[in-house]
Length: 77
Image 1 (spheres, helix red, strand yellow):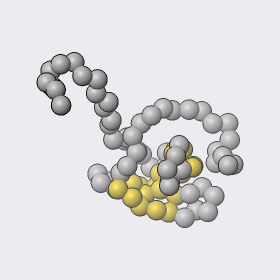
Image 2: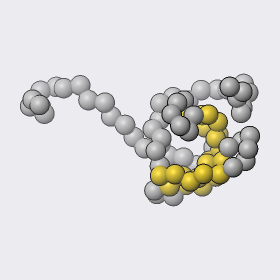
Image 3: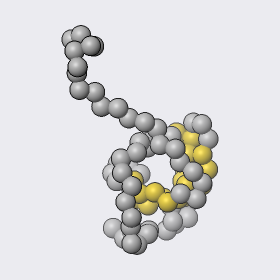
Image 4: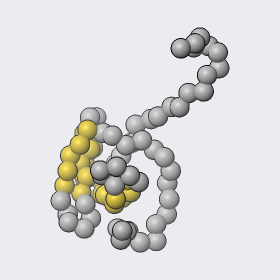
C-alpha cells in the first residue's frame, strides 16, 4: 500500500448540496437524464422526472462534476 505521506495522488468526492426546484442532469447510470429536485433531507433526495412527472426518493448519491447551461430542458435523447 505504501506510506500515506508519500505524496500519493488521491481523488476526492463531495456530496452535492441539492435544493428544491433545482434542475439537474445525471450523465450516466440507471438514473441518467433530466430531473427536478423536489425535496432534500440529510440522507435522502426526492427527484421528479419532468416528462412523466413520476417522483422517486433515493439515498443521496450524486457528486458534483460540472455545471452546464442547456438551451433545451428537458432534453430529448
